[in-house]
Picture 1 (tube, rainbow, N blue to C red):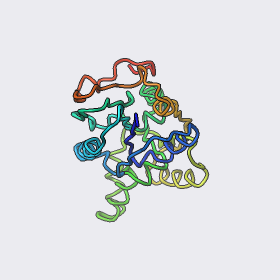
Picture 2: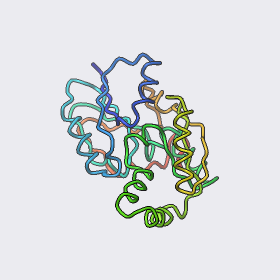
Picture 3: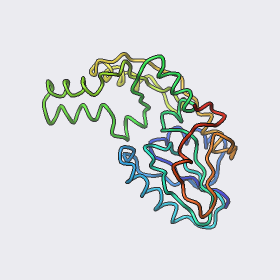
Picture 4: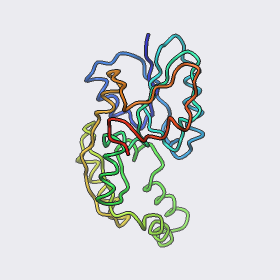
Amino acid sequence: MKTVAIACNTLKDEITLVTDELKVNYPIVWIKSGQHQAPQKLNKAIQNEIDRIGNVENILLLFGSCGNSLYGLKSEEARIIFPRVDDCISLFLGGNHRRKEWDRKAHSYYLTKGYLENESNIWTDFTYSMAKFGEEKARKIMKIILKNYEKLRVVETGAYQLDEFVVKTKDIAAQLGLDHEVVKGSLHILYKALRGEWDDDFVIIQPGEAVDYPHLLFSFGSNGVQ
């Protein structure tokens, strides 16, 4: 066995779509969702899984850097490979450069089905505040948090039917006072990752080497990161 992937459960719809199409048959270890806002916790969970993996050449991490949650990860036996993206939204949009292009048009909060259902997000924050403080105070809190945001953008990844999901996100946008927009995503980095096309869009860490901060400074790469 040459390759094992470790992936966040939040990305499962999209990764399953790609693996089914490519007929990928190497194992994928799923990390429990809901840890993106706790980078140290996510880091520990990934390292624990790396430590359990043996007799492979490559450990493919299907994550963004997500608040430097990949910092310090290390395998004594295998290469560690991960995409040059800041977070999972950038991964679904086709790279950091595409994320920046969309943000230049309007500063936005992004959602996918997996992120809405599995992660702490702006909607869970709002409903929590509603339950704890009441509607009036919760809306004031959200107004402060979202003061620089114009839109709620749903990333169309192609991994699920949008109709029912968009009904829900339109209501969320209305509740939060944001314009709603569906934007076309791209899974080309996931396809490259799972085909083993590890070019300049990926960081490759050699066995015995730890992920360091320079590895997480995505200044170059064919995906156009600036």
